[in-house]
Image: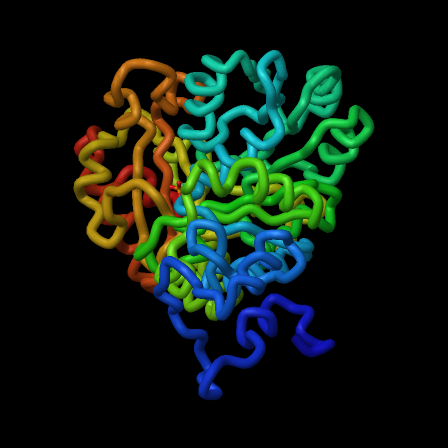
Length: 397
Ligand SMILES: *Cc1c(COP(=O)(O)O)cnc(C)c1O
């Protein structure tokens, strides 16, 4: 890397030299790496020489992705994982023991919540949930805790926290801090620079950006990443594959450009929705007077609440460009109503169970063009009106 490669735009564009002067790194599709002699193998095992041995542990294409992500997050190092959940469980498991307590902000990604409420409970690790905007409550909960798990903004209710202030509260109590930064990406929020210990992503979202891979990553200080790499990563076995790493590297090339585009279109749509009568709330951090310190931009994921004059299933069915589907962060627009989560299997499974109001609808604003997306929303609201009027509230625009 050159000295001026300090902005996200520059970091994603270049990556050292590749064989044959190729501009793009190769996919090193191999399970193992051979040694030229017994002595070389022994010295590698002794740790006297650092080289690749086996792709469950590390691989050149995976390493290229890890180094680029670490640079983007202003972190020393990073580890790729097979999924965002593998990064989350692998990171949490590296730091907790039976009897420990985790403090977690409310409304986190549902499977993170289920990890805490099912698997970790079985292993005698308990979790306290807090409103991340209430610093007094957070400080009280952190006393005696092992780990503070954050997500900001949260991915259903979009609650945006003062991440630096929360990290300082945890530091004062000697509690390790972890944040899920999938929503903001390092383009809009670099938690390490705000004092957070470990930053993780569902790389299936904006990092990949093309809805063609499931992957995860965690970044942080050399010491903490080494701990995860040595105590958890090889045994969980949820490694990032070379081809997935290559897709992520390709996705990253356009991350800053895509984020600026998602931001502009999403803000326009969120503001217009605010003016509509059947829309009782719009949850988008960019609609507040100012963003919390450290969050310098907003992405394409937000949610709204609709009153009884809109039939929510009919609204979802009527949307043409916004497809019904989970996940987000790709090129395409998506819709998912909180109502569907009520139909998930028993257990701590429903978004509604952990406090998402049932008239919440989450939208991901993709890259299709803001005018077409807005027309889609307008026609879907009109066709889903239960009051028989043409388009409820549209007259107020
Ligand atoms: C999707 C998601 C995850 C889980 O990531 P996977 O790659 O699906 O395992 C974690 N956190 C957030 C905020 C997510 O949206």
